[in-house]
Image (cartoon, rainbow, N blue to C red; front, top):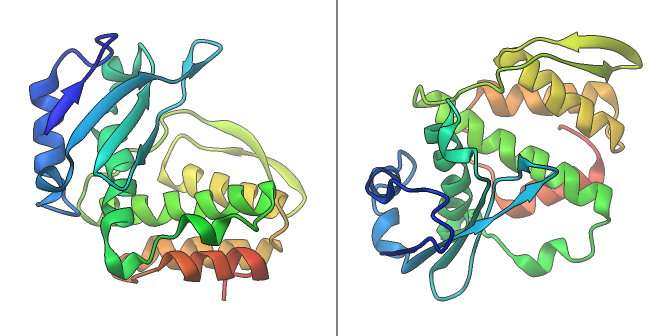
Length: 201
């Protein structure tokens, strides 16, 4: 696996390799990636970590200057590469074409569900790290503080789904089910069905 880091955004490539080769959701992940190119992905000085993989097994990892200095750096890398794990898993049935008809709001919901699904599995392995900061949000029409905890992160997922069209009860039910039942295997088409129906059933 080649690591191309033209701006030296992640100086410790050995540690990055270890995280990829020992990924808790796919122990063979490192052998299935040909190249990792590390690119700058920042907005207003804030890192917008993201990842993509092409048909040839080449990964583009977007990070910011501060990413490798964050306390939850390992979790960030594991989370981003979990996206690659899912895309490479035939049972997950990832399809770029399937999301094309979705609206921007529906795509946001799809990513919320997918991120939650990734985090629930990493949590099952004892590797989940919550966001680390409290924030204000709205749930079921009421403004409240989402605490700096895993529960606060779940509240944020529900809030975003609700804001994008899910009824509160359905958003809450879906988030709770995915988080509390990590052995539950979701597919990409199933997530899209949830988004299209706006329901957690």
